[in-house]
Image (cartoon, rainbow, N blue to C red):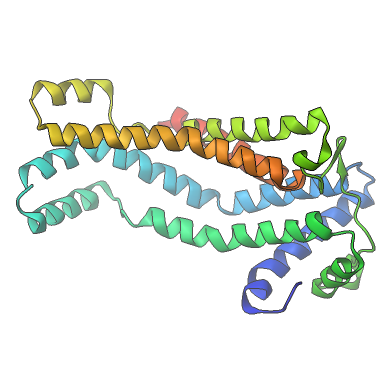
Amino acid sequence: MLQPNFFNSIFVFPILNLLVFLYKGFLLIKIPGAFGFAIVALTALIRGLFQPFFRKQLETSKKMAELKPHLDKLSKKHKDDQKTLQQEQMKLYQQAGINPASGCLLMIVQIPVFIALYNSLSIFLTNGQGKEAVESINKALYSPFLKIGSVDLWFIGFNLATTPKQSGLWYYMLIPLITGALQYWQAVSMTTPTTTAKTVEKTKEKGDDKEKGSGDDFQKAMNTQMKFMFPIMIGWFSYTLPVGLSLYWNIFSIFSIIQGKQLKIKN
């Protein structure tokens, strides 16, 4: 279950040990729902670790949105000369201090940690009470002090290993709704408008070609679909996956919402 391969040794094992350490700490001070609070604390720590990356991502997104009218002008001016267009775009990016590839690089850096965090939680939440699973977890722990016999997976009235689909209880059905709503709120708070209403009106007055207008409409339609479809998809996942994973997902969303609001206020 927990093979000592490269990925597990570098990412999963450290996160797993930190999760168990936090769980043991909350147990020591006799906090009810210790494992749930351990998930919250671990998620907050991971989110804090990536705070500079998320901030950079938001700032780059905002600058790109501000540059869009200028990029549109360049596209129209050099539409028949792709080489010159690319050169002028790169000059514009350099003047604004933007690396267009930074967004992709930031996501690539985050992905292994997110996968490791998800895998660490899944070990407990899918079969964490099984003897084989507990033995596998204990083998991956760095200290005998951290070894566990079992884990209490109850948190504020919810069994973190149960899925809303399995529970049959009405209040479990609130989890997918809350998760989907938080994902939508996150999408709204983290989105920077690509154009303002005034920019659109000026564009129309200048008589830009219909192809450009249809391209903007297509992009707007895609953004709208992602804003609504992604929360629906995440809500469905939280309906079929253990509640503990939704807890982790929602804590991430709340931090993203707060950060997005703060950045907009500062700007």
